[in-house]
Length: 242
Image (cartoon, rainbow, N blue to C red; front, side, top):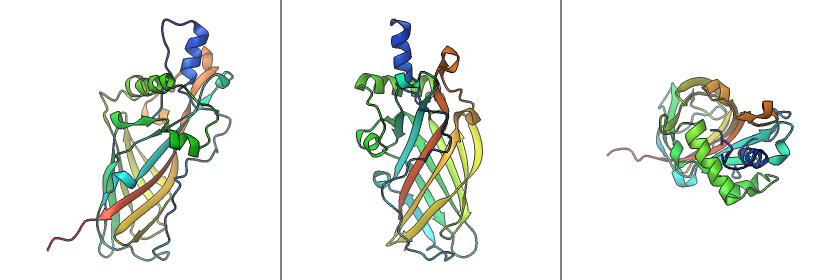
């Protein structure tokens, strides 16, 4: 989910580079930088190793959060901006088994609903520059059209499997840009008062999904390959049928 810099064709090269950087990542020299961390924490409502309450849960879009940090890089990185990409309406479900078995779930992200640089998120992650509204909109359009090709690949999907107890490592099958990859994701999760909460972070390489990060001048100004992702999911229990 990489915001792609805007390159106004009618402007001189220096201005074009500045617009490009407005959508790039910050620095490839810091691959271990912390991923976004959602503000709310997951309560320890279930003891380690204890089975979570069985049932079906539907994602609460209004109380779930996904944040993707996109960094600028290259020798001319100072000309650009880092960005945070989010989605206000994640869709999905989770199912916890009764007895032995795996928890399962699926989360769907409609790419045309992605938001670039929501002000509260930029402030939370203390991004060090402030792009203009025009640069932000240009970044979003280029991200959707040139990078993600959202008309051809409108959805990102994440399928999940894990042992049904807190602290279990989650196996995620991520489909983006027509490519599917599997990845292990450490997740803190719990159930309290009919609400399931799951919180975690991961890093993805755009190139693993057939996406080539944009660069100019031999990489002197570029979008970093790595995306740092933080999420907090809240899902409500579906009442059992009478």
